[in-house]
Amino acid sequence: MPLRIDILTLFPEMFGPVLGTSIPKRAGEKGLVSYHLTGVRDFATDAHKSVDDRPFGGGPGMVMMAPTMFDAVEAAEKQDPRPARRILLSPQGRLFDQPLAEELAREERLLLIAGHYEGFDERIIEGLRPLELSIGDYVLSGGELAAMVVIDAVVRLLPGVLGHEQGAEDETFAGGLLEFPQYTRPRDFRGMGVPEVLLSGNHAAIAAWRMQQRKLRTRERRPDLWRKYTESSEGRVTSAEETTETKKPEHEAP
Ligand code: ADE
Image (cartoon, rainbow, N blue to C red):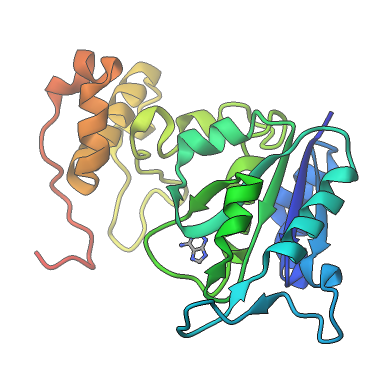
């Protein structure tokens, strides 16, 4: 059974270009995922097609109303007997990360709720009990872009999507480390070369160099990830051998 992803939004038209391009598109074409958009406004019951209203107690902005959201969720869920893991995108939510993407990629069905305006009536959260997810500590004008981030990160992990099975294993965050630097032709570019070891054909030396680079980068750029890594069993065994990274990126003052 392919992963089924339901998306509830006021702006279904935002999703077509993203889900119809590149990896998310290919995953759909291969039958590994199916996308189902529900326009929340279709469930509004008044003449103005209202989905939001002013907050009780006053204050700026508008709040997404519970009845339309409940009706939209129930209608979407009825389309398939499989229970859905409900996810609501919100800057108040748990921070989305790679381990969570991996967990969601093992689900049979995801239902993502994207909101707009100042927020959701709290009873949407109380009643539907979704996992509230944030993609970072900044405020977007709606949950749609966040939903697309989550979908992209999940779909590329589905078995068979990337083709080269190792693809998702070597990369940034796999094993809690950033990725090593990559090079391709030409060997010489504007006076910049390629590390000798990568041209050596010595696979063991290449693997060792790449692992060392992953550790160096993680330690220098992401002390938070580095701490977690060295505290993990994997890191405790192997973390002692690094030196400092010498090359500073151009955009950083020396
Ligand atoms: N909606 C608005 N801002 C958001 C964020 N940072 N993450 C998820 N959903 C959001």
